[in-house]
Image (tube, rainbow, N blue to C red):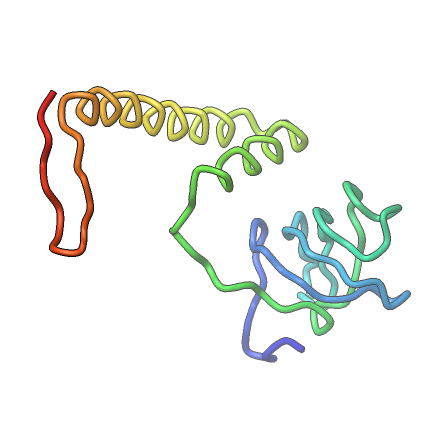
Length: 130
C-alpha cells in the first residue's frame, strides 16, 4: 500500500488496515524508532469497536492521505469534535476562531443581501433595491 520511500510522521492522516484485516482511517500518534510500526488513532473503521482507540500496525499497511487546505464549514465542526475528543486545546482554539470568523462573515453577507436582492432570469441578473 505505502511507497517504501515515504516516511510517516506524527500527525499524518492515514488509511490502511490492521493485522486483523480491519480497515482504518485516522492519524499517526506515534512511529517506532525503526519506522516499521505506527500507532494510529482511529476515527473511522469497518469495526465499530476500534473507533476512538489507538491501534498499532505495520507502516507498510497504511498510506498517507493527501494533504488538503480546503476545509468547509461542515468539516470544521467535525474537526472541532475531533479536537475535543483528543483534548487538543490549541487545535480546538484555532478551529473555533476559524468557525467564528466564518459566522461573522456570514452575518455581514446577510446584511448586504437584505439591502440588495438579485432576480435571475433567462437574460441574466437584475438588481432590485429595497
